[in-house]
Length: 346
Image (cartoon, rainbow, N blue to C red; front, side, top):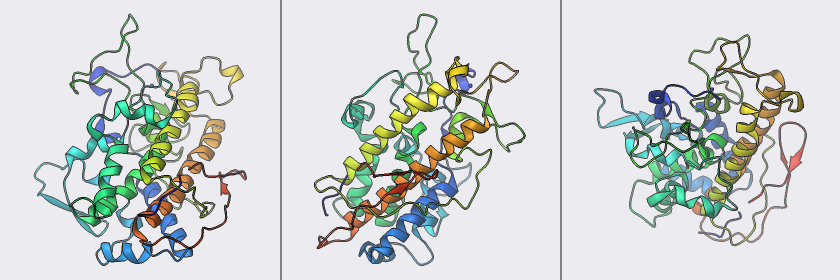
């Protein structure tokens, strides 16, 4: 393996944590990340392209398998042992539920990615799951490589969704966290924004819209296909940084965005001084998604999607290409979707 660069009122307690709705990015966003990553690998003539083709069965692609980790989390009643998704035959895996998150409370302020490890007990979080699946993918641990590839692709995307790396604890009248009756040993929380209702004027979503699903769907009331991630370009990688460090850094960045941007905009009472603040609807519970919020936050969400694509390509190139490259591609910029450009922070 080559070294790699790097609702503010809460719903009823019984609804505060809803695993089935906690999907990081929607189907199309996950597929768009994977599709762009594969394009970048192909443009670089990376040996990882051949390795991926050898791992996946005929008819399966990186983009087709990208959403599948969500599809296997909650088997319906009467389901058999396996299901099919994206060209793969996969075992139902309800134990993988916590692999998609790291529940750092936004009341905290970690100084670095390593400070988030205390919320990953036993590796049972997005960072630990990524490590374990990468070990399988690279042959360092036993397991099915196609399934591992599916998880690696999906989890890299998840780590870039801010509300999968942060949560807000529910406090009692004395300001103390409350234990979660459904999750022994855990504190009651808003489930990464799943308990915060929002609405977009003029839309009628098929399902209730929450802050979490709003971000999953790129600030839209429903999943919209055709996301353009062409601004994501191959970039040179800093030597000595591991894939694990890249994913941990992505989760740390996501937490910071949730803590300093997403949650403050939802709860900010000083809307006159914050153009992105979300005003309360007439019900006194739901927050309104303004056009300004949609525009500004879409730019941020699409930047995270582009970063995910760039990093996924780099990770797969590192893990599957084998021999070291004789050189590195020149550093390039990554468009944020609003005409700006930034250097990928490995």
